[in-house]
Length: 212
Image (cartoon, rainbow, N blue to C red; front, side, top):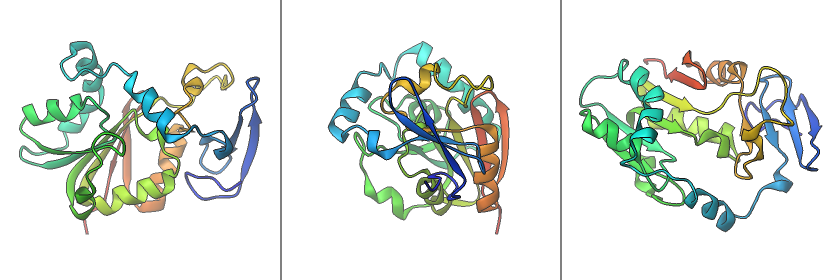
C-alpha cells in the first residue's frame, strides 16, 4: 500500500479489534485507514452536522485560540487568509476577521466555493480537518499552490499517541477520521515541499512556504 501522505511504499498493515484495517508508514510515521472502510459522503456530512461548532460558543472559540494565537504572531494586519475545511460553523474565520484579517471560507460540504482555488493567500488555517483527508498528499500540494511565497499554513489535529496505544485511541474511533499524523509526519510533509515548520504546542503545527 502506497502512503497517502508522503507517497512512499514502506507501509505495514495494522488490524484493530473492530476489524478495521489501517496502514502505518515507516517513512513518515503517518497512519491511515484502508480506503475500503471509508463511509459514504452523505453519512460523513451527517456526522459533521452532529458537531457543536457554534460560531458564538466561547469554549469553542477558546479552543481555537491554540492555533489562532501563534499564527497571528506570524501575520500582518490586512493579510488575506483561507479557512479550509471550516465546517458549518466557521468560528475561527470569524475570530480572525474580528482581528483585522480578511478570510475566505471553503468546505466541500458546507462552503464549496471553487473560486478560492484561483486565488493566493497569505495564510491558510486547517483546524480539525486534516484527519478527514482521503488524499492528504494532494491536499498539502494544493495548499502549496494556494499560498503566496512566505505564506503560512496552520494545522490543528490530534497527533498520534506517543504510547503507541493506537487501538484504544478515541480519535481513531470517529468514522470520519481516516488519516493520523505524528510530528515526524509534518517534518516529511515540509521537506517534500521545501517548507519550514514549527510545532508551538501539542497538536499544533505551523508551516511556511519559502520566499521566492
